[in-house]
Image 1 (tube, one colour):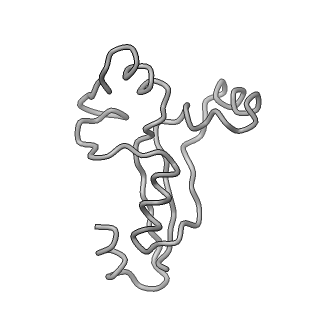
Image 2 (tube, helix red, strand yellow):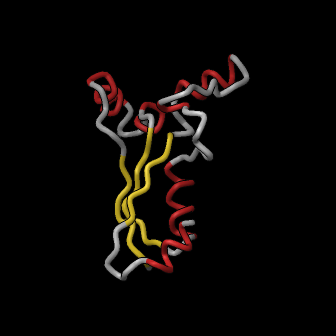
Length: 107
């Protein structure tokens, strides 16, 4: 689908993709402790999500489909999440946010 969109997109198009975070601590916990993701009807673990991606996976998927990633981000962290980000020098967000987004342009 991303390749098809690339073929149809104008040269100045902007693509926004948002996906659930495969490295969220609750997913890792449930995989280790319960042996399942624990899908739900809505939210982060929505049963309609077809793929789970890390930021690295998302950037690769977008780039391989002919898009140039301009920015990657996530929703704002909670107050505790901001403290954890400072304490870990920016390494904890990958485990604290429920989703990642990418803005990309056609190559």
